[in-house]
Image (cartoon, helix red, strand yellow):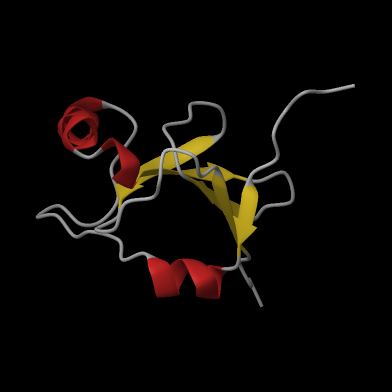
Length: 98
């Protein structure tokens, strides 16, 4: 039996109502390496509850999680609004390729 806590899943619509993705001079996404990662780490240190990771889901979907993750990460981003320390959130973004 697993003791893992399941994250609260937000719809894409609920995410958009609650959070605004912050824009930076380079755009709104941070690479997971190099100069952009250095900038992201500085921003994350200032606002740790505004940090998100975009992950590659198992079925080809994108998943936003409210933390710094390493496995299956595609990019990082920061929101203008913070989440609380007790929140563990996930947002599934379905991509329509048709």
